[in-house]
Image 1 (tube, rainbow, N blue to C red):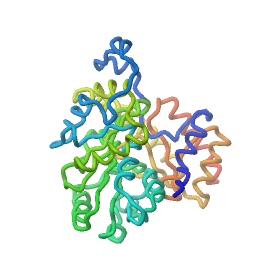
Image 2: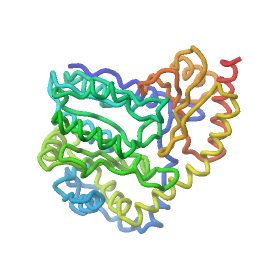
Image 3: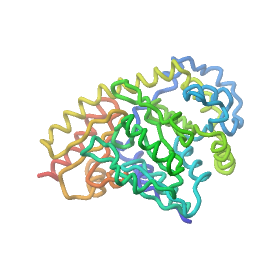
Amino acid sequence: MRIETFEMERMQSTWENIVDYDMSESGVRPLTLRELRGMGFDLDALLDEPLGYSQSNGTIPLRERIAAIYPGATIDHIEVTNGTSEANYLLALGQLRAGDAVAMQVPNYMQMWGVARSLGADVKTFRLRTEAGWEPDWEQFDRAVTPRTRLVYLSNPNNPTGSVLSAAAMRRIVDRCEQTGSWILSDEVYLGAEVTGTRTKSFWGMSDRVIVTSGLSKAYGMPGVRIGWLVGPVSVVADCWSQHDYITIGPNNLSDRIARVAVDAGNRESCYARTREILRRNLPIVREWVESFGGRLTWTEPIAGAIGLMKYAADSPSLAIAERVRLNQSTLIVPGVHVGIEGHLRIWLGGREEFLREGLRRIGTELRALFN
């Protein structure tokens, strides 16, 4: 089946390097190699590294370091990928067949929506409720997750709301999936990007039906390294490796070396602390900006992550507003329709202060004109 256009990614790849202000980003401003060298990365030694193939499923030293993050995991539970998105894609290719049912949390990063449908799966959604602090609508969840459901996809912390599921909600999701025999795919790429520092609990270890994906792009602040990973049962990971052989073969050799330094326990916490500090500095700026609209723009502040999902009080479709901001202000934002929720805009929180303030000013100019 032909795969549909991934509207958000296509919009970003078309415009993000053309506009003056890209406020559609989703992580904090990236680390530099200089900062990474301060964590012990031997840049000089890398100059002598042969530019050959890396191990296709990730080198043993890197998988050992990643496995140490997940209690009970071994290197055979780990597949290293080109970003978290490839980990999600490999899992879908390995596990989904035409006629399977997939349940998907919305709003969300809509990659799985398109991939699952391209494989012939029937995708049902269950929404996170704004009026309930972004907890799931349990009636919708129970209708979406049935004995026919092969896979349940969610992001926790959530993209784009920045919300984190409660322990009770996680337990309810796991219990339901064990009853139905469904796999849980928990995309945890924002774990570690918590504003307060209270670490999000992983789904890993809650059930043998759990598969986790993550990577360096969000909480670590290294999206350009393009290293992600999948953690799951050995047989599932082996299936993903087989798919990997047909697609990109393996991750970049130099990126594997960088990732070994990044995921080391001490450096990992340093990356998380850097992300947290950026968000702590920026959140009051965005809060003040939202409040300046006198209730015409509202949000639930994110617990984790460098994006804010804003609800606006106007009838205009979110895509039309995003286009207006891009054309009039040379500023890119994500319309809510691209993350599965209309009447909202997704706005970046993770840039330098002067960049953030000017980007918000430009967005605000168009919103105020819309509201008046």
